[in-house]
Image (cartoon, rainbow over the protein chains, first blue to last red):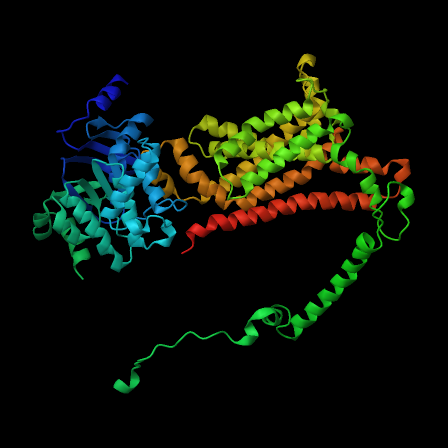
Length: 259
Length: 370
């Protein structure tokens, strides 16, 4: 416990790696979903994770904020080692923003309230201050004019941009994106990707599970290819797309780029 | 090829719907007389209703006796409501001493004001009023109704009765069973095996016994097991039994609402760093409770009506006090009036709850329509 309080007071590892995943293993019952994952993400790094469905890519990033529990190996986020202690998990989650495939906005709250909720209840900010910073982020994702509407009144693209603003309101050190554009109509994908690209240029540490290879080429520092719960290949985008080494990567790329 | 394609230069303006589909006539045409079979059915039903409703109205209103104080006033062909008006005080207060009835008046007037305050959306300071209603009001009500302190005469609960007792049981049951049901529903979905086990056993036990059995156990069996000096009030035992019984039903209604909320909502809350109770209180429960308003109010209504079962353990609620009035030798033979009146009172309360719930549902829904 003393260790936990020490990490809290000394602004943990401000120059160490952002995320360190070491020999991570996870099973669903007897099914081995994640097999010996090793991954180090440095500060400001932008990583795109791709792979066929069921390859464990979502499961892996969901382990980083403990939406999934792992059985073996270690995860250290911003210098804080992940344990099963609720306080520790909540401490890590405050530093890790997440954007979901299905947005998961709170439908009974307005856009503004969605963005203020955790500021008020987790960060204990006064309402006025929370609303001010929420409006700043809504401005940045260009949706401030919809602040008083309910999520159900917005389009998918607008909802996803609100979800990004909601996560940013907590001023996270890392952002996790779990297939953020997969549930969107084609004409709305761009508005979400634009926000993500802008965020990447501002130096946010990002892990994106996505099939948007254009996005990977533009912003990623590294592309990770996963299959059957393992990291098969990991390379800078130019190398990954022009010169994939593994057969499975080649097959995957030919399937998603080949039409 | 160009002859096959369509090319429009002017857009078609929106036109009004045809006359026949609008207005009162349009409604009758569309709903009652759209075709020969429907028209025949409509006419038969209207005639049947007239045959049934008219005699009742004749009995209850037109030929009825309204004014008077004694049986001698009952001269007409129809109902004699003098029976109700003559016994009205006892129907409302039961055997509560006449000199102390102002205390009952104050409690229920205050309750009516508080409920109205909370029910009308425009009223300000809802939080404080709710806190007052749930914390301060029960204490005031307890000291006023029971008495025995502050120079107020002590009124034992066996003297309580009539509408006042019915409302007391219903209000305590409703206010107690809802939060208890929420806790049980959350507990039943808990990942902690002990918490889950206790909640499942509690719910299944109370759902598995008839309310009459619960009341019998509370009034007859409990005193056999509990040592004499711990003997607490019969009404209190009935209240606890009713509360536990209905909280089990409430828990299952609320659990169905919890299950309808997607996993993503909880995960979004987790990802934002909200604690379990914050996620439940701010995200999951507001949505789940809204979904199951019809079920919750259904349970409230059932609870309200079943308060009359306390008559089997010797408590005189509204229905029991009216029944007791029927055995008064001055008023033999007025049971129809008595039961119709009791039904009307119960109906007014239940129907109000139903209407209010529909209103709340509509109000809470507006935010989500596109």
